[in-house]
Image 1 (spheres, one colour):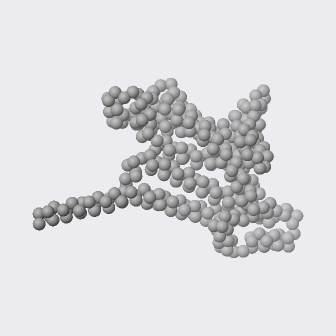
Image 2: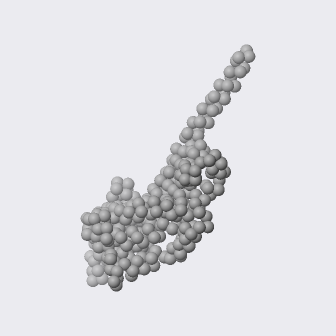
Image 3: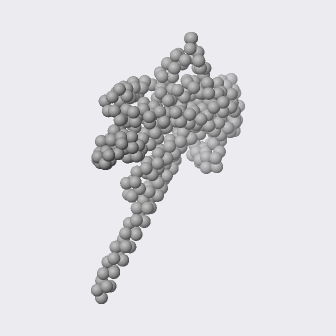
Length: 342
């Protein structure tokens, strides 16, 4: 009897421990599932808002296509051909059904499939952002670490000062300054506009990518370096770093193996936020430099009242924001053990 009384609580404890372990193991997956669900809901709301807002834009797409000299009969016929004479709910249902099939419809202006306009432009934007990220993140890490290891030093003060100055300047001001400095006068080193031939990779024309990429690099590095500096300084003041130093570990070893890994989560979140800022910044900069990306395609479509192209570009940009934030959150979860046990 005594052995039975002892074994039953032990078995109960084992079962409870196994359940708790399974719950902790499933926690990250539930969290990722919730984030995915929230992302889908957000994208649906964006699609609804974009569709109905664009339908309320002033002007007439049929008149844009045919011109002011078009007769009422031709305008009526073209509106019927475009489906603009159908009830707005019917148009929305047809549009959503097309998106689910990967079909954003045809451009109201050029009559080409919208995917033939938006997807090449998206590829050009991703090429630009990839080049900027490949340069910005390593440089920001080096600058942030250099500023963090000597608080109050020259690099620390420089990073803080430059961050304030850059954050106070609009993107187009930085772009115009670079154009004046590097594309005009005696230093006409790079073209002021990025006239990349249709179908060519932007990487085949690095001189035309230089100014847009440099503008985005100047915008992104100070913010990233500031976040790396702040998170690393917090880690260097922590108890585990003090304990590692008391054990006699060298300063570089403490920095690389103890402080820096624990600073990755804030840095990853800052990198994700920077990527979303870059995606938004390309809309303005692509227009200034006439870079053939999705930002230029969007601004051109707005000017022409090409509703279907506007809708597709905005939905794709929104999907990009959601994916970037989700990836940043998942990476943060992977590098933060405490979050994986919740």
